[in-house]
Length: 377
View 1 (spheres, rainbow, N blue to C red):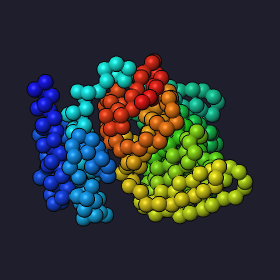
View 2: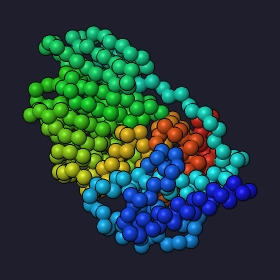
View 3: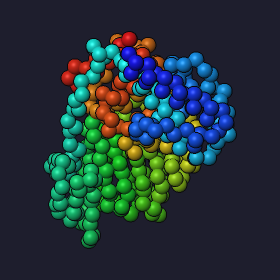
């Protein structure tokens, strides 16, 4: 019992340091000597709400004061890192002692991820689970041990052929196209691309989520989807277009892109131009297009192996976690999907650790059976 009391006392002490740091803006002075602090990263917008679960002091005014004093400079990245880190520390320092050990406990096992694979023009499938190099129709296909496959050609290829990279749920994979463009595909995604590009346009088709670092050229690079096309010359952007999602998004990091959206109910289209820091969100069935400023670090956190959600509904969070770990998620009631929270944690912590933190932050419980996760109150 004394050990529990000591943990609670320590957590409250850290929380008081946070309150003081947020009040005077002197965040750099807060650095508790804890491994958890240096392991966790995050976003602090709802930090005060999580801390209030364990103590009664009011941090909302201080938090808003600190954010107002430091925006828009990207120096907030350090603040984000330590703010949510300590929030997790506070929650973990107390919460783990009271986390249910019955149905809500997730057994420490990781599901084996399926290998990404290529489908070549003749239908041949190549699993990308080992290092390999092969010549195919004038091309050299090279797969490394670092999760990246590339298409290279030294001489003029007789004709372009269509290929597909399939990335199943539970894994990620990178591709270097013949023009040097790099694409990183998130779990449950596919990219259809030619072995070489033509002289008029460089066109690929995306289903799922992809991070594109496009090699600059006078030949336009176009990412197509049934609901949204993105046209660039050379830039870095993130596109999310899962067939089952109600919204398609494009987030621009560098350069400039033209986004054209296609309605699913009629033949109308809408076009907008994005500059860095803007995100286009399109609802195909309603034909609604919105453009807003976003935190690109949060939107592309998955590229760094992180989950970062700020004031996001639990239903959306669990959809992403389900894809990332090849899990089937069901909710006992629709109301549970609307619970909002913030969470930021490294993906390699595993889904068991992630679900524990969600439980502590929201109070919902999880039950695991095989690769099925049931969410209940």
